[in-house]
Each structure stands twice: as structure tokens, then as C-alpha cells.
Image 1 (cartoon, rainbow, N blue to C red):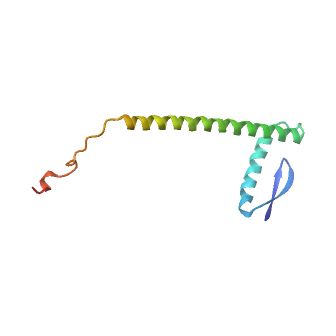
Image 2 (image 1 turned 30 degrees about the vertical axis):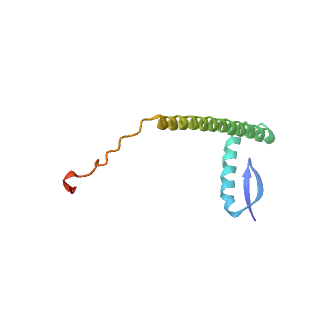
Length: 106
């Protein structure tokens, strides 16, 4: 187990993590700092962190709801496509289609 040192809102944190997670945690800390910078510096850090957390949760729930709606629409369109295929008239198959008549024997 490794540890990664992060700076969030000018506070240093050391977080235990797997070696392959350290870059991701560093990137996430940078994104959080960008989010925190949107709030006035006069606010307490706990208030800024709470607002950042609430806004991230709101975005997450909004995107999750959009994914549910998209999956429903995909299912609806898939059902329509399958129904259309079932109800479609069978295709006439021409066995000679694509063959060169001059090359046939007989």
C-alpha cells in the first residue's frame, strides 16, 4: 500500500492508496480544488466543501437520471426494431444474384 500526498484547499493530506490509484487521486484533488475556487474565500472551508459535495451529488444524480431515461429509450427503440423485423414480409432470395451468368455451366 502506498500513500499519496494531496493538497486540497491549501491543506496537505496523505491518503493511503494502491500505486495505480495515486495519479487518479491527484487528478481528482485538482478537480476538487477547481470546484472549491468557485466559492468565496471568505467562507469557511467546511462550508465550501459542503457546497462542492452537494453540487457534485446533484450533477451525479442528474446524469444518472439521464442515463436511466436513455436506457429506457434504447429499450423502446430496440423493441420497435424487433417488432418491425418480425412483422416484415420475408425477403425474396434470388439464388443467382451476384453471379456471373457467363461462368455458369449448364
